[in-house]
Length: 340
Image 1 (cartoon, rainbow, N blue to C red):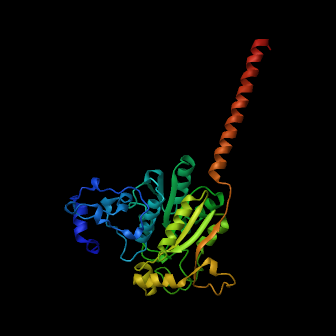
Image 2: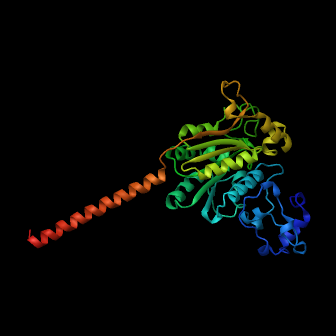
Image 3: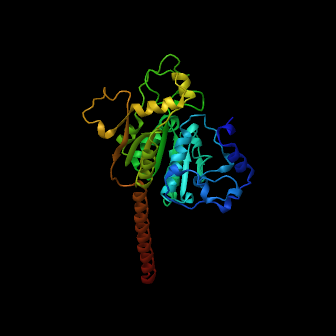
């Protein structure tokens, strides 16, 4: 079924290896993402053109297993564009994720060093990576169930510590991979498989929670706002400290079947129509914003970064211990010389 969703000629050449990819790998560039395939750069007899972003994907696992209309593919596409425009070598990136539909975005699809961790523990693993390898760009991509549910405690404390991590939380309001259970972001009054009558829990405004916990950069966009989302991802990666982007995403299957809206185009239009930019919210009450997605940059601040402080503390302690050992050694030597 998935094979039929893409161009059959491309699929056959891609999977059979007929095209000599080594001759046509694109270089890093900043071309318009809408340019797509570039047939002029490939000889006609060599097979179909190869999109420049394929260098960032694990081609052996394509096409993806995302449900038709899922926002996960949009997030993967946008993330690859962001990395490409920034000229970041994927060998300088470590992607960390947990368990869930959104966790498939970095693992297995994005071609870089990846940690696919236990459920809810992506940020805990990522903290260890960043402390030991501060030279790497450590990026977490996972869903609302993984990061805001079982992993919520790790999320708020990582924001509080302000370790230099970039977190992209894909929020589709539900546990999609396991059948459609209620999640911490499921809207009030929504039916799910575990709230078959109504969800009586009020959802987290998860980006606001991270902002209150101390995140250095916090933003929210939807899968409709792809160009704004790409820029926000780039800002988050460039920002020193804990950065967080909430990505409101459509889920036509698990969420759609419970809400009666399974058409992805309709869902994207709903995201568009329900979004209001943070700059346009002045004077609006909480009641006015009910059911709206406040998009844009919510917070950007300068705070001391945990990793820098930790390394400075280690350096100071090493110098202090070395000085103490040196003084002790001199005292011992002096005692031997004087016979005392």
